[in-house]
Amino acid sequence: MKAEYIKNVDLKQLRDLKSSFWKKVQANKLPMNPTPVAMQPTQAIRSEWEDKPFGLVEEVSLSAAHNGRFIAFRLEWKDPNQDAKRNDNSIFSDGAAVMLASEPGAPITMMGAPGLPVNILYWRADEGETGRNIVAEGIGTSKTVDQEMVVCTEHWADNKWQLIIARPMKIETKESIAQLSPGEDMSYGVVIWNGAGGERAGIKSYAAGRDQLVVGEAG
Image (cartoon, rainbow, N blue to C red):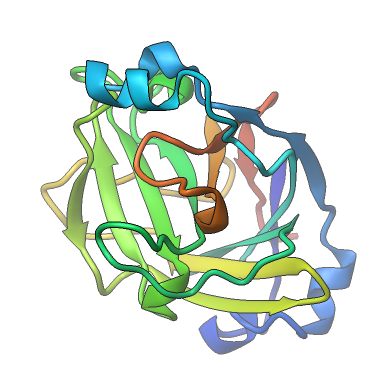
């Protein structure tokens, strides 16, 4: 998958679902699967969900573009319900995330491993344009490191979510954030939560990219 270089666009245009350049950026359809119950971090969660259906989103369309300073990921998936509210007990919002390997060899399907972190760019429908920059070194280790660098644009209509998640390509930090440069490549994945199905935390749909994310060069 290639993150296409788009010249003469700013962050506002990268985040605009109606920007004309998106029609020229190839979209990749990724089949999604429920996360295995055996991978859930506690026995209580495993027992609760052992016989329940989850991982309700079966496919996501993913494309990416950058302007040399910012990168944007565009996701589209079917969802008959717009779940944009949340409380801690019974109502859960829709959500999505793009995972990037912060280090070569970081296992996307396991959300990283000790010493092999992944960077998760996270959006939740009840949080609007504010995304989260998260790092993890394995299942159950997610840590939000900031809520300023990741910005989102979302739209739900006709039983479908359209979402853009964007962030700077380079971020000065001591945290294990993926740093992106033209010409480089890395492993990636996508995660989606269907709020109407009670999905949250490790209960979700996921897809690991079958190829590498290649950051396109100007030319």
